[in-house]
Image 1 (cartoon, rainbow, N blue to C red):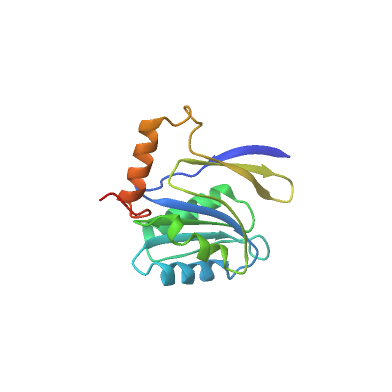
Image 2: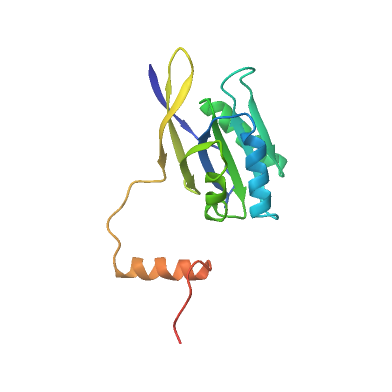
Length: 165
């Protein structure tokens, strides 16, 4: 067995990804439906790595550039039954629960805007994802100014209410 890392590349500025695993060819269309019904105006691309039959990387989306980027990264990762969603102008939190509720979705490896490296094992049979490196290692424990920044950001994004009079 060979273990290597594959960097997810060419993700546009401000875009987010969701990397997961599922078990059936209809995943790519089910993910498409759940995203457009959750966020009708979002731009996105999806790739799904088929692991039997023709063993193709299947793609859908409403943005051809994002779809092409998803397909290229999924092919590079090459791990069976995995999917990659690239979202533009939206956050994974807006669709993550809906994605997890798709019946064929087995797991989510990450949902992030950070740089991602995928740890892949390759055997004679094929490839599988062992895990991901999501972002950078910590630089320390948050201090008072970091707490203020975090709370201000969440309120600016509209994820928390500002209760100040």
